[in-house]
Image 1 (cartoon, rainbow, N blue to C red):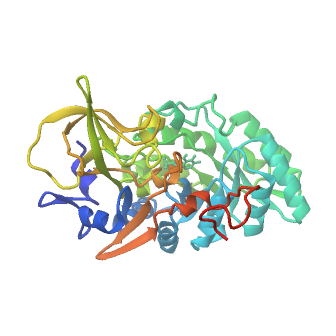
Image 2: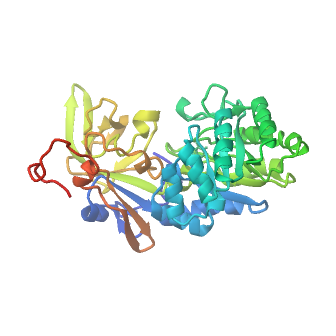
Length: 434
Ligand SMILES: Cc1ncc(COP(=O)(O)O)c(C=O)c1O
């Protein structure tokens, strides 16, 4: 189950999983389950790996906020020099609220609304990564109405079928909604050159997620960097190339994408272009630095099949049901040896798709046991929902020998905040809020 590296943030000491000096079981006593626990040192280490590997070129690590947008994590990454890859007004707010300066913010996404373009411009972000002709035209109109010049890059779809574990995480081939084909990208840059409120600042590509091989990045980058001389000749003063994110990590014992290897492969393409390199890692920075802790409620045997029913499910970690994502699961406190059974670890949600693991060989836990679901720092809380009127869990950050609750568990009242019953007579509606 996994490589040794898997256990760096949450090692097992005397049979108990820990986060730094804190036994995870102790954190559960204080904060309950389900619970996300993050390890700050590992987050920092992962961020710094990029700086070290790419030190010879001007670069920005624009952390992909969608992976885990907790303010404390964003703040620390911002302090270390990170920028942000954002896709919504909410992520813009998070990044700015965490102190990430606008000149390190890149705005991606296929469906930017007029309001989002306006707010991005108002904030003074570094560039919009534009994904269609309609978006570029809208950006032009919005910029003109504000008397601004909008900096942009075109997200190029290089038509590369990237080797990701699930089709939903492939974004670099012709049939996806992302980016525009090479020839259309040239047309868009040509069109924008005649517009006084648009300014081409870079070129962008993102080919997918959980990619373990550096070569697809080489192919994609070569393709977009190859477009640059023609654009410069036509008059565009481009200053960055954005290679996107998707750098793979070991969910199932595979070896991670080594950032030094990635640098070795792509630096020759960037070197000499005078372009600043933008990288947008998400899961690489936070994935392994997080666990989801959950408690076993019941065991259920149906025929020969065992179900381990736990108090966290697809509402806390949707990757298994949405992408078929694998997450290692292990006891927080190693029990005395038990029978190994093939089990489904399932949540309490009323969906057959609510599972954290399927057909997994586990020492059969008992009700009350705590399980740690590993590699849940990315796309765990970020994709969490209130489905079945569940309260989203607390998030705890371990920083050396300090412990911070960086988000409290939602309350029952949080679940109805903002809702009204229009015909309710004030004072008659039970426990009403003012
Ligand atoms: C444009 C873009 N950049 C970066 C990322 C981050 O991906 P990952 O968390 O796999 O690094 C994504 C993921 O969807 C993305 O769409």
